[in-house]
Image (cartoon, rainbow, N blue to C red):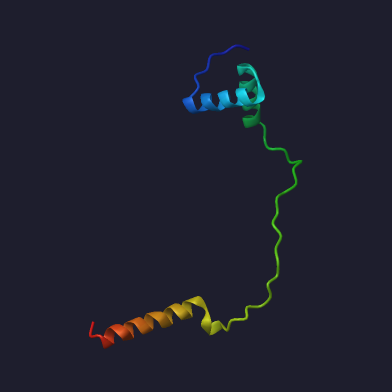
Length: 86
């Protein structure tokens, strides 16, 4: 089938790169790109997973969590400003 299409400049550049890398004709490159874009990814590939590790229980007591420490720092700053008369 023959048809006329207008390519955006970025698409044209990608096709030119594909043509140069794989030594394809323009027709082959366009057909390849369309097939790749329209076919769903193959499910033959194994699923990518990252290993997980159990790090055990937290060794820091609960009252020393980040929020508690931030509250303590804020309290110290308020007391410092009060001492300066601010």
